[in-house]
Each structure stands twice: as C-alpha cells, then as structure tokens.
Length: 590
Image 1 (tube, one colour):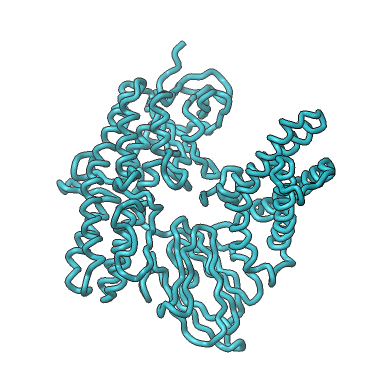
Image 2 (cartoon, rainbow, N blue to C red; image 1 turned 180 degrees about the horizontal axis):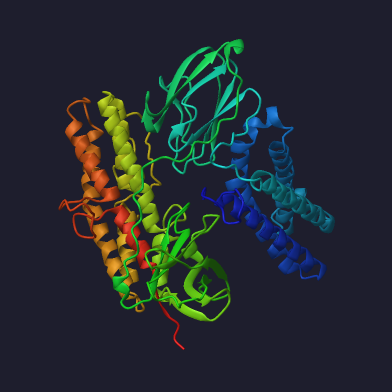
C-alpha cells in the first residue's frame, strides 16, 4: 500500500487509509458518547470497545512502525521542524490515549482485575474520549504537514536537506550525483524516488549497507573518516557498473558547499510509439476514441471522427461520462486536421486513470448542446477490462493485471541487461546476483526455489513477489492477464472489437508463458555459474528471451510485431488491452 494515495495529496495509499480509519474511529467514539448520554449503555459499550480495538490495530500495525522509521532517527537533531515536532506530539498523545483508552475499555467490559478497577466510570470515559479526539486532531495535523505541501517538480528543483546533510536521490535507476565530494562529518541521505526498490551498499560490503528501500524511504550514513567510498545498488548495479556511484570524503576546508540536488528527468527503458486504435473491428462507425498513456496509465484519450463525419460549420465538443451518468468530464472541442480527421486529444492533468471513472463518450453541438455522436463501453465486459487496465483483485499492489505485467517485464529486461554488463566486466558475482533477481521475479515468491540462489545469504527480488508464472497459490501476471482477457471477450455484451483484441491478448499470454518458462530455467542455471566467460551464450539467449517477453519478437522479419503465436509480447498485450477499452463512435439514434 505504498503507492500514490487517493485523496489528491502527496500521501501513500496506506497514509490515506490510516487517516480515514482514524476519522472513522473518532466518529464511532462520538456516537458511543451520544449513546451513553441517551442511557443506551449496551450500545455505548459495544461501540467504544470496537473503536478501541480498531485503534489498537492501527497503532500496532501502522503508527508505531511509521514513527520508528520516519521520525525517531532524526528527532534529536530536528525537533524544531514541523515534520518532527508535530509527529512527536502526536506520538506522545496517541500512545497515552492508546494505553489509557484500552484500560478504560477493559474496565467497561469488566475484564480488569478488581484491584485495578475504578468506580467513577463517567469521568474516566470522558477523559479517554477527550484524549482520543486530541490524538485524532493531531493525526490530521501530521497528515497536513507531511503530505499536503506542493509537490516538487521533477526537473530542476533541489531536494530539501538539513545542514551537514547531502541528499542523494535514487531516481530513474541512477544515484544523483554519481560522483559526490563531501566534507568529513557529513551525513548522506539516500532517498528512493523510484517505483522499484533500491539499496546502497559499499563495494566492500562493510562500510555501509542499507536495507531495501521502497518508494519514499531513506537511508542515512555519516562519513566520519576521509577516503573514497564506491558503492552500488545490489538490485540494479554492480561495483562500478550501472546503478553505482562514488563518495569522496575530504577535509572540511576542501569540500564544495553542500547543495540540494535536482531530481533527474526520467530515462529508463525506451517505450515504442503507441499505434492508433484499429477501426475495422467496430464495423461501420463515424470514428473511434482510444485511451493512451501520457504521464500515467490511461490518462489520455484521443477522439477522432472520420473525414466527412463531422457536420460542416458546427463546433463539436466531446465529453466522458461516468457509469451512472452523474459525472461528466469535458474533453474540449474537436478540431479538423490536414488529414481530414476531426479530433481532440485530452490528457488528465493529474495523471488520473480515465478508464477507472468513465465509460460513456458523447460528442455534442458546442458545450451542452444536442448530442450528435456517442459510444459506451459494454457494462458487463467493462469489469474484466478494468481489471486488466485499472485495478485487479489478488495482486500485491493496486493495479491492473496487464499493467503489473508490463512493469514486471520492464524490470526483467533491465536486469538481464545488467547481467550482460556484468559479464562484459568479468564480474561473476554480478552475473549470479542478477540471475537470482531474474529467477525470483519470473517465478514469484511461492515458487519452491524462490530465495537465495547465489549463496550470499541475502534472498533478493526486484519484483513484487507475484511472479510472471503461476507459483503456489498465485496465478502470476501472465495467467491473470490471459484469463481476464478471455473473460472480457466472453461477456454477453462484448463487442466484436473486444472479442478480436481479447483474443490477441490471449495469444500474447500464451507466448509469454513459453518464453518465461525458458527464461526461468536459464536464470536458474546462471545462478550456478562458475566463470564469467563461458556463460556468455546463455546470457545472450536470456537477453533475447527477455526482449521477446517485454517487446515481442519479429519472427518473420517483416519489420513489425503482430498479434500471432511466436511474436506478440507484453507490449502488444498491453496495447490490445487498451484497444479492448476503445470506443466505436456512432450517431445518436433519435
């Protein structure tokens, strides 16, 4: 639950859920107080006890860990900063409210030993209620301070840091800066800003080693001695190769002034140009509309009317409408192009997944005028399509199945490339480490062989643990993607377009299943490599498989990858899943 939250702030999903649950607890407690005033003591006791239990779960499972991880390490030096003093005050009041409220709840349920019971329950209960309300208010204050500040732009904005600290962003699989010069006594703060986990490990494995840092987590280390300290990320680099850096510690008078470091602009694996939505499967239509990715998944829609379809001399405006018709999103006016197509391209400014909220498309005369054209995503087919592209149940992170598939296969290709770099540098340990990472990513955490395969006593996995292939009780992303596409194509209201492209996704999944099984076996062999030279053919073969899994394979050499056995990979599966969500635009029937 570490992904982007849903309340429109900079918080994670977990932080948003915690805030909402805290408010719900406060509401339950308040209703309980009202019940006591009405002398409905049975209901009062049941409500207060439920709220105390729910609060205890929040404190133990979320809040204590958050405080220890995010506040305690810096509270001594930076208690004067709002981030720390607000959280510390909330922690003190919250833990007192937790202990005191639990004591009152035990007394109310007559669980407390007689020697520890009190008699004036009303006074104790009112004080406990006051403490809970104060803790809730402070919790809201913490949320506001931590998460409602303006987001830092990705380019050209320094990351804030305290005196005698130097922040090193881990972003786009790069340490920034790669080479850092600091005065002795400086604390370096590695901050993970990628969606993938990273760590920072000294080349000698002794001076410093962080745990795996998830998005938003930090690792601090103070350099008290002069010297050169090369380091790397174990998941995405090797000593001196790929995601690696150096820190030179010099006497105080010889170091440059510490400054905030801009977050680097995204790089990563290049993404092919999206292809237009095929109109043929829709039959006779006036145009099409297709979801695409701009800043995020499905945050853009392209609406196009065929040449001659738009009435001459009229201003046309497009809208998306929610499933129940209560929410409408204006997309803008359609403009004629040199190719004769009248179109509008709309990108959601906050990166919202448009498919999550909208299933109707309308084109009207001007804004709010007569509706001329329309289209709807079939309601029964829409459910599995959204599971593919928006949010599917049963996976570790809230995302669609084919979205997770694409994320994991990009990471697979990245690590295979790292393995090739390690081989070129004669780094046997790097080869075996990345082979372990590839195997664990493909296999999933419930595979019997998942874990420490290279013998370094540190089982590592750059994926989310769900796996590409079926493992234990986990279906894996490939099977879920294929099965869900088949379910959408088999829905009673599925259009011909959904059926055609659903079959293409199924074919892609079958290809991926075979390629991934081969990649799994090759990676397992490479974890047992004994020299860096003889394994070159195996690594080359694994790279070819990884490229096929991620991008597909042009088997017949015609310059394109088609939705056919032996060619279609993850990228085509993703594109055709988006095609399944496309609209065939038709005139509004009178």
